[in-house]
Image 1 (tube, rainbow over the protein chains, first blue to last red):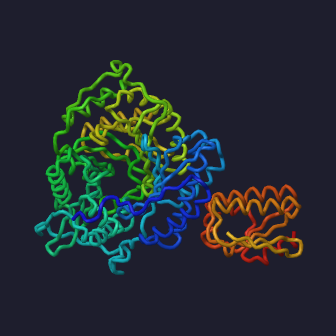
Image 2: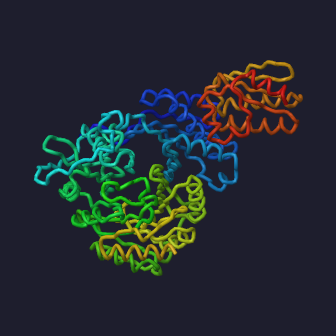
Image 3: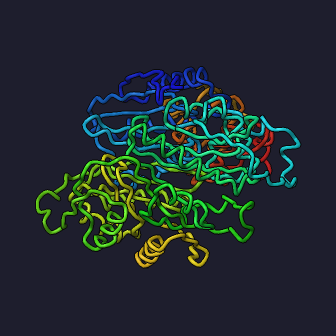
Length: 492
Length: 113
């Protein structure tokens, strides 16, 4: 199945950091991206975001008089074309960036024209900005008939004695999956990727997504579940995109799908999978539980209001809804030392005990000098624009962390991102110290995700003017309720 | 980028073609400054043949607008292609400038003022 690599470098050029080479960069981006399938306005937009990123390097990365160089790299990822601008100049100085009002103009344009932007720190190899455009693949509308589009047709339930098969999803199934999701949700399904069959095909081919589908005797797809991974050899993945055709509710399909998915993850040697179960009902929590999942946190407002549950229960769903963070252990993970913040130690200990994790909990006061950090921090950010969520991941603690996160947080709030998460590495002795300063910025406890990035992470959450009504939150089990109380109190 | 200059009554019309990026922005800036220095502050910029603009180009337009307004002049823009219009809209520049469908309309707007 693996005939598409997760990432393929198409071209790379190295240039002196001089404005006069920008037209050459633009032609380079234009020629290569059109060969890769980008069309029309998207090409000009990609040229523009590339120029803005190059200008940031030319103007800010090098000392006056220093002859610097930078690289422009074009990459192909599943469903996407990526332009990366890399340099080994001065670390990104966000204070200077903030002070210069006019440089904001470039950032506004970049954010408007790129589908995603990632700011990455490469340690000694410098820094990198990735500008991402989704390829203009046809969406599901191109594959469905007028009759199927008529969403007012009621669909009678199917008798329970019908034989249903579950198997690994193949890339060729992706059109059929898109039609199934459309039948179940119309266009309201939160993960927009499923509506683009070619995108899903490439995710499957690259090994970044492993899916299981449920099929009727005549081979039609009526259910789906996926595990998405950061890299093909990642030891944990995010389980999601659960879809069950409403005509087949009550057939136990979700349990069967999760079970196949868990069994497969086990065979592949993964440590586990995490997932975010909705709280407008308890069906998915219970299904996950029966397959060994346990609660590790509560994410308030995680599920966007656009994700309707029409076929399960009618009601007012205008607000974002909380989700339960779940972890399903499938293989034993290594024993780890963790440094939970003192004030969250009790709840973190409970989460570990409930999941039978092998962890040595080390007290903050025993840390001493090992919590010392270098001057600059490194924080990677990824944004899920459709779901209005952003994830900050600390890859290096530094003395400037609070200032850097405050700056990034303000940017994300101005972009009207609803839910912002920050992941702190629990195996780092400085986590207790920095957790408190993040909480002073308005973040509050969300939970933990084991084995997320070569070790557990402590996730904190920030809500940007999101109304949270806890009365509608349905939690299946007592420990989840206890976590919800804890998170609600932590929010204050 | 090419800049073609002509005079229509007491209005200076600049027709830009090609790409207005960070590199060519300097050239346009020099051209506009040279006009403003000699009090030629009634300007129309025809963008019909302009294919591309980045934030550096926007900044040159903004700086020139500030200068001509200070001298009771104005800078009017005409004939934007959809991509250029999109960039102006996103940057919030469409409210700052008087933008016309045709060069003639932009020039005659000076007569009405």
